Image 1 (cartoon, rainbow over the protein chains, first blue to last red):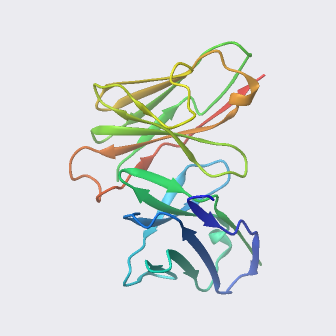
Image 2: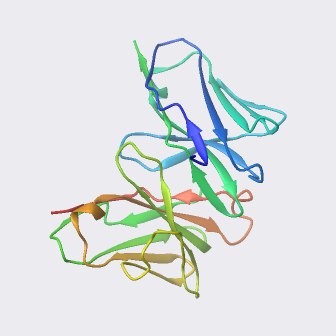
Length: 108
Length: 119
């Protein structure tokens, strides 16, 4: 079983739509949680950290459920520029463990 | 913000040759750098953790004699792919973690990656 699992998608949504991504992780000792964004042929870039209390950054809302070992990302009012692959990442000691990513394509 | 560069950004080489990739932290000191590899449509896989002045720690299944890592200074780590073969063709990405409070906790700053193609 992969340590971090994500639905690979693609999710094809129109501009303005709300889309949600989910992620599960297997190691209950994981300490920190992140969502990264990766554009094609580029390096991953940190989108936001994820906390149990939930956190919001503009149109993006992340949530962590430690009991279920589940992480989510909600994107509201999707923009064309949101098209990318979204990577769920957990840390184990000082290592980042990446999911395979969920591909989002926003169309006009 | 913290900037990490990689050089070269892409390289094409013949099978059997060695390729060196540089990773530099431009505006901060990085006691720890990480090397990842990403195959098409797959996740980033950690290859090794590099600490300045000491030997790198390799992940299971990564051959240390094939992927030579040197972290000679607080701003530079190099990865050398020795005797490269077509199956080594991949996207190699480094990241650097500030040695001071330049980053938040575990935050790592990624280089732009190096695309290696072995013919």
